[in-house]
Length: 404
Image 1: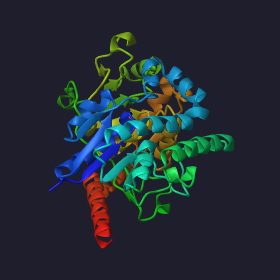
Image 2 (image 1 turned 120 degrees about the vertical axis):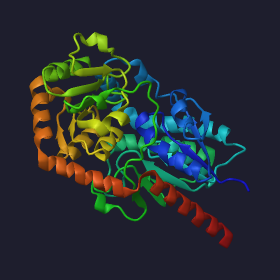
Image 3 (image 1 turned 180 degrees about the horizontal axis):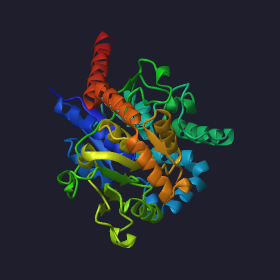
Image 4 (image 1 turned 90 degrees about the vertical axis):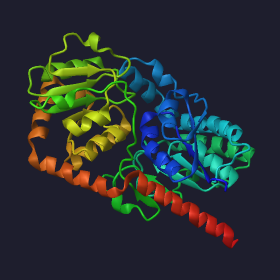
């Protein structure tokens, strides 16, 4: 019997790809044929899940790789802030045409798409394929939006570009807002307790908590051998990490402390460039975050959604230094829910870091709230819960077709 074919459409960014890996792996194990278009950098991680990877090219995601200081990255994003939504639409259209070629003789039965990967929505609409929206960040409905506001002028430009494209391709869209409207099933990779205004989301939304798959690392670190010192992890994620001044401040702040520090600097900064590294520091360009977190007592992070959820699922409190708009929302959310503290980049000093770490690590009530959130995450169901909901949707589609 022919296997049901599910396509996973995403954008090439670790924060969007990583949460999908455990879900597609679960679907493969349940006997589905899953295809996953990916750019070169992501192919090794995605292939491990057992899906069929289809290589494609992304025009707009290569730009950030060429910038080597966090200020340049932020300037590139803020100077393009007005154009950012247009870039998403252009990226979606470019990817859409590639999907048309990839799937010309092999249309999927169901499409999963990241909430920013609008090519998935467009392709599904063109071919009348049922679709499921995946939220690697906050879920959105008519009451809640975590996207930056745009002017009416830009909204009109976007709507006009989309209308021209949809008419040319014969895609039945009534309005630009339809692109962002919820599907019959929408899956968010966080527990409802962390979601902004979580009680305002109906049964179309499933909050499964973080979906954490296996990840390959080049090396393991011998941190669990060192029991005398509590472990602190420091990482600014995969994009906004070229900030040498921050790493130097961390070295200064915790050089003579009782902490064992594991610090990741990202691919653009070498540990050697940071000068004298104290004995209680392990500094690498990339660290095995999922291996380290179970041994970690506190995490200084940029507040990316994956890092935040991975920390909380291990019961680790946070000190958040956000680097962009969405991370600021998460940083404020962490403070609001009493799971840690946050500081904007220009507020960070050696003394601020020392004081924040001392206060967060010694606050027993804060630690208890982190454990309560960890319990929420454990009960949310993860990748298995997502796969069950996707299966249920497929069965209801099949039954509907039989009835017709």
